[in-house]
Image 1: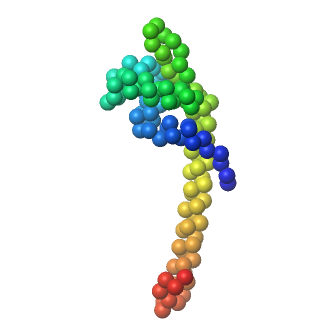
Image 2: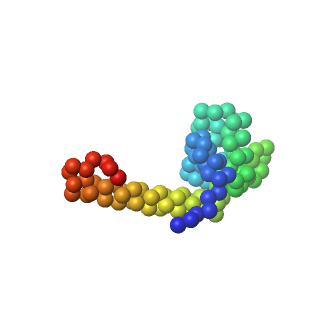
Image 3: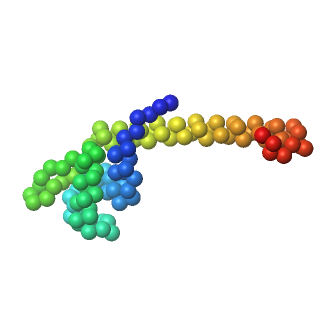
Length: 120
C-alpha cells in the first residue's frame, strides 16, 4: 500500500493554530483574518500569515469582502487531505498488526521453551 503524500499540505496542517483555524472555517462556513483572530490567541497579522499558508496549499480560497478577504475551505483539497490521512492510517495499522504478529510469535516460542530467554 503506497500512498503519495503531499508534504506541503501536511506541513500546513501540522501546525496546531492552522488546524484550529480549519476547524473554525469548517464550522462557520468561512471567515476573515479579523474574525478568526478574535477566537485565537494570536494577532490578526499572525492569522493572516497562517491563512496565506493554507491558501498556498489550496486548503482555503479567498474572496474580497469590503476591505478584507473572506476565506472558505476548499472542499476538494480538504477531502484529498482526509483521504491521504486515511491511507496513512491504514498503512500504520498494517505495520502495527505485523509488529503484533511478530511479538506474538516470539512469545509463543518463549512459552514453548521456557529455558529460552530472548535468544532470537
